[in-house]
Length: 82
Length: 82
Image (cartoon, rainbow over all chains, first blue to last red; front, side, top):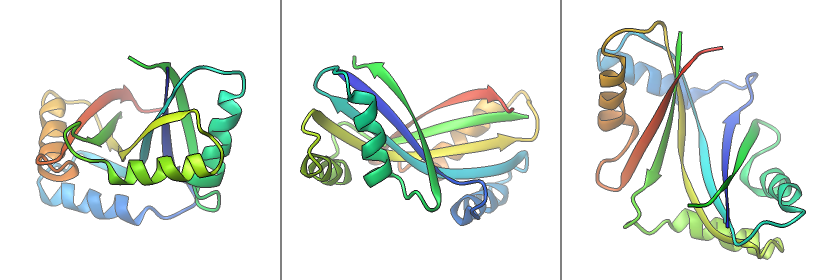
């Protein structure tokens, strides 16, 4: 079994309003050392087994479902599932 | 500068409805090899500099803001910011 960890974040050019809101909340909690906050989505996909096209399929799943190509980018790691 | 990557996911005991919905969407796209999907939140916190209580503060920020202790768990990595 393979575990694919996917990280979807906003493109640098896009204003991260949620990140800004969280940063101001963190500052109001008294943690002024936090200079910047970005928020994204995290997915864990378990694949029943390893197969030749796994990486190609992960790219397709990210491009066509998990990430909005207009405003988001994604990266992923393919690991052995525990 | 330190970059802290935070991963917030649902506790195992909690039904991951979003994960289930995404899994059925992935299956309808034809990728039947995907056995399980879990969705969570991903945060990147940039700390202006390293300091003794950084880890303690990250725990407090996660406990009091980023994660809902009733249904979520979190883990994080502390890295050198690029």
